[in-house]
Length: 156
Image (cartoon, rainbow, N blue to C red; front, side, top):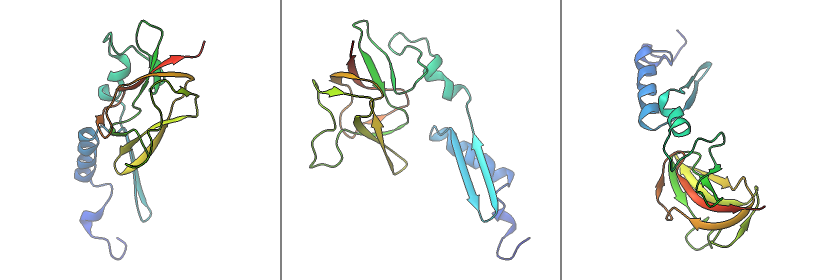
């Protein structure tokens, strides 16, 4: 055992791994990568919880390969869905204008919002081209993986 480490500090301790897996399930995480000195552990899970949003036969949430842009309503519009669990922000800061507004045209690179997950602010691109028909989430509202955030009329 190297100097400074205690027996309970082993990153590969079975109880510690169980605790990490439990935290992953509680916070809907699919991957954790931890490193302490030369020790490293990378855990991933892709069980039913990770597959459910894609495979669920719910009529309002059709199956989609891409978690961000997917087909939605019968009017030909598509939705931009939350790629992760977090908090939705429609603008960069309280004094800023929203990233996008109803009626605005977006391209695949247009940032439409920020989703904060575990104190990391993730800019979410539209990943499609078209006109914003509807903003489906209120500013600072919690979103789940796959939750529709915007309704877009795609370019023909």
